[in-house]
Length: 307
Image (cartoon, rainbow, N blue to C red; front, top):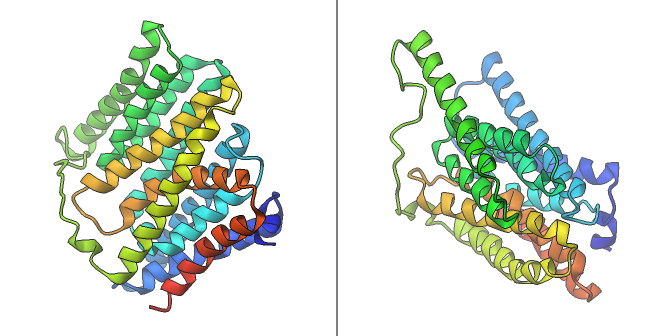
């Protein structure tokens, strides 16, 4: 019943997704001390919520346009449920904005499968990742995804390997110029220093431990079947599927190394993981298992709200 309802794209599905997203967004802001509510603060929060919504629609576009899912709404439903599972993912404005730019870059990287306008797509992907790193430094790790994608396509064109570095250079030069004009120095616009931390004490709570366990266990389980399913895809699509799983791995690396582990860093992991798990949901043959699988993913976030 649940899987049948979300198996096709319907306006009702998106309304449910937006309601869950709004709930996660509000919970994140009632769980912590925030600034006194003013018009400026309210406008900022509305803008951040709209950016989250844009991220959801962009995720749906990436998945459907590149045949990563079978035009179901599973990926956006899962994305919103994961936001509710770890509401702290919506707590950082810099991470929310950075994640949107990473998704824009992912869209350009995955679309390399068409083998059209390759130079433009490589430059754009690197440029948007560079912009993302200005808001949250460690999102620069996703630049590696461009290089790995070129390797997947066995691209021997030397110019294609150089172009992504030009995209990053363009962001760097523009940022330095902006910093000189407005701040009278070279590097204040950058979020430095790029610290690394392996202190996970911030996750030492029942809610975090349950949420992270559910997210990773369902993700890892689905990944095994996702990788097997890649072999069944058309040859032209296989690199795109591999790009998504590589994106999930790089996102996990971000979670592992970022210095301020407050939960917001998991936002980078949600989009690729949603596609992986959605893909697995679509290939499950046992209807009862599919219902239980999706039912647990829907139930757990709401149960955690009561803890």
